[in-house]
Length: 126
Image (cartoon, rainbow, N blue to C red; front, side, top):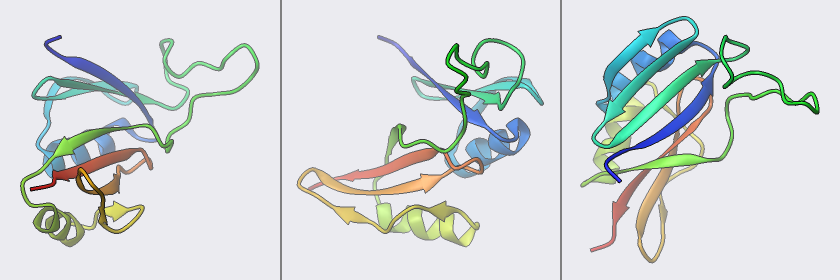
């Protein structure tokens, strides 16, 4: 597999594009704000859909539930120095759900995008 696509529902596509490009090094692939944009980083294509926007991604389900931002699913970005990355992002006003957690495989922290969707920053052990 050469790439993977992840879709996030966001409150404001333009704000999300700015967050991912300026803070996390993504590149704009396409921008049809205010309803949709796609940004890429390496083999990851992140599709950003506005709440209630056109297309199928944000349409209500048959049972009435609607897609909304801020869930717990996430993609992971591996970093060399987690503490430095967290310090940089905090200085830029980023919001985190937790503090750095150290586990057997490494250390991680959960960064929130402007809509409350989660990005896991991860530093492998060793």
